[in-house]
Amino acid sequence: MAYLLQQLINGLTLGSIYGLIAIGYTMVYGIIGMINFAHGEIYMIGAFVAVIAFTAFSNLPLVVAIMLVLLFSMVITAAYGWTVERVAYRPLRGSFRLAPLISAIGMSIFLQNYVQLLQGARNKPVPPMIQGGFTVMQEGTFTVQLSYLQIMIVVTTLVLMAGFTHFINTTSLGRQQRACEQDKTMAALLGVNVDRTVSLTFVLGAGLAAVAGVMVTLYYGVVDFYLGFLAGLKAFTAAVLGGIGSLPGAMLGGILIGLIEALWAGYFSSEWKDVAAFSILVLVLIFRPQGLLGRPEVEKV
Amino acid sequence: MMLQVEGVHTFYGAIEALKGVDLHVDEGEIVALIGANGAGKSTLLMTICGVAKARRGRITFAGSEITAERTDDIVRRGVACSPEGRRIFPRMTVLENLRMGALTADPERYDENLAAVFELFPRLKERAQQRGGTLSGGEQQMLAIGRALMSEPTLLLLDEPSLGLAPLVVKQIFEAIRRINAQRRMTVLLVEQNAHHALRLAHRGYVLVTGQITMTGTGQELLENPEVKAAYLEGGHA
Ligand SMILES: Nc1ncnc2c1ncn2[C@@H]1O[C@H](COP(=O)(O)OP(=O)(O)OP(=O)(O)O)[C@@H](O)[C@H]1O
Ligand SMILES: [Mg+2]
Image (cartoon, rainbow over all chains, first blue to last red; front, side, top):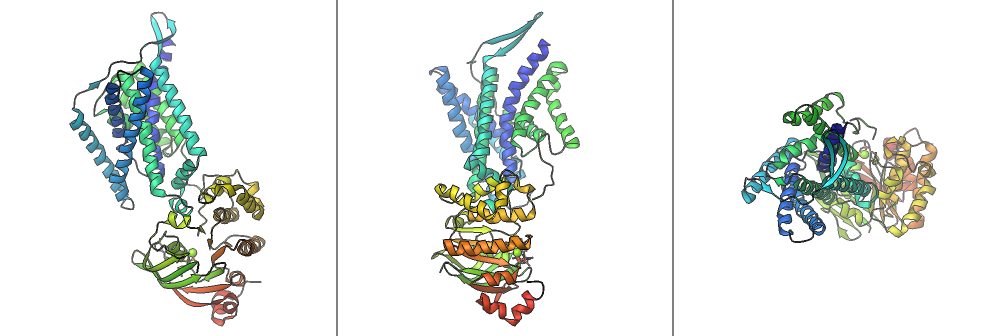
């Protein structure tokens, strides 16, 4: 029981991070119908900016430093997200379907190499900053730990997800975003600047990935240029599991993937934990291709 | 002159859908555009809105050339369109669809415009929270027109507003167009299969045949024209 609880706590933390990244996949898919394979690298850049910024702000009080790091990472990472769309995807809009996909894979490799060249191939550590936590329960010799950092990650994620959902559902920009997702031509016919809305989608997705990057930096205390590959794939899996194109689906999918991975690692084998996520992906694609919260392909328009 | 279309050619790939169209709409007019299926009526409306691009020719709106302008910029100048196929946002509620229509309008006038649309189509008020995709065809048509009206356009483009509607509702819609045109001096360019109704409503009309204007005149003149009668008015109408 205690062991299970610990795995759930760990899984929820990990799942929050996946969920934040998955939103970027799902939003971009929703609006331009492509899988942005460079999104994992965007998240990796968010983590690197966090490392650099933490070093720069190390003299400031912790809370201020974390706020500043979040802000810096979000702004800079969002600029990368924006640029990727402008450089690699927009010129290919209206081209054949696979073209942006190939461009995305190219962009992903480019960004990995770019960071490797700029920052070196070795791990970048940051000192642990948020330590301590609660002992939730004790069972024999096993103690269930809930760290302050885990609380911070989960709470930040939930607040961001709630805020983002509110933004998409109730604001004018959110409505314009959904309008473009449903019918770009009609959106333009009502005065929506479609290109700007697509850009906004990349910026928002990258901003959320940056938060995930900051969190993972704090959680693991180390980043490398390859960080985005696996996390990106898992977040993508999360988006598909939840139903690609669905915002609540991405959040739910992220948390589920985190939980599955933690439980798998805890009960079977941690070496094979990556297999768990992708096995789920295969099962979902076979039995429920539209995902948990996705909508079926056909719909009356 | 509110809208002027001069020598416009529009292509879909190699297909020339408009072959040098000339047309104008004066301020405060209702102009009907009639023509057979595939004549290019919808293409002309889409070209005016910048959704399809004119390869040759010139389009001016309220004195400014808009031929190569982006759709949303044209719309912000005061053009609204209820397009072919209605294009309701299926996963937005009726109310959200209407709010999208009000995007370029003065927010202060939102409540008033919404009340006017609900008065015109009480059905939309009943269905305000229903998702667009689940409306009936006729309700979607009402919503498409209502959404276009929400922006308080100076030029309203309507592509077959009577399509799929019961005769009584068609009558209401045409009556509404007449009223809006008279009260608000909203200029209207109307594409219709329902040539009889359209020409009776319109001040002037044009006949489009395979991408070219072949005839023009007042609504009355076209109604009485034997060729128009034979091609577009035979049978069926009251
Ligand atoms: N996207 C497109 N690609 C290729 N051809 C097109 C496209 N849209 C329209 N066309 C062609 O252009 C011509 C004019 O089409 P348009 O839709 O403007 O006709 P219309 O007068 O509106 O007809 P209807 O009364 O049936 O709506 C037709 O021959 C049509 O097949
Ligand atoms: Mg048409």
